[in-house]
Length: 198
Image (cartoon, rainbow, N blue to C red; front, side):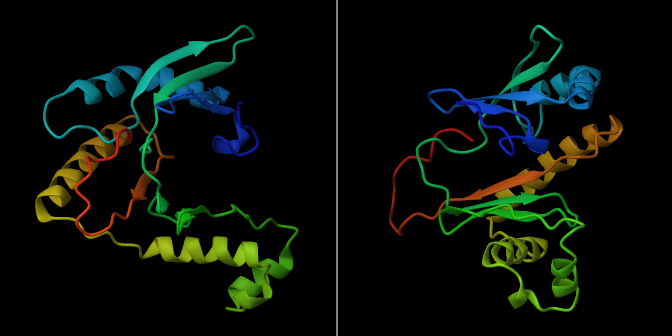
């Protein structure tokens, strides 16, 4: 069933297909207009030679009666392997952990009316926060300095792909995007094929 109130950004609806290889996502008016505006440059980047893009693959963009826009995109996560960690990295204070130790991290946001949370975090008194907020806040702090060990060649390939992707997004004046990093831990000596998807 569709997930709302957090399934997508800003509470938009998002629903996986039965095989979990695709997601159907509802678009806000601004997102729908932005996708229409950049579709040409996005398609060129996805098809060009050189380092393959790390951008989400969008297969279909459509409109339902009433003018509401939707898109069908490839799932970013493997469909046949448990994800131990999932990091949403933007290079700013919005960086966060979405999954740790194989479990989802509850997204417990502070709001203006929770002044005591603001004071506790500003004065390094995190122990005064509810446990759910402590876990979320720790994930945000850890995400700021999170690093990943990669072989040199893989690191260079990923860097080159990100550089080209960000170059296209910058030229198109798109500013709200993330690098999603999934960590799958495998036992030493596990020679199973790489997880499918993502």
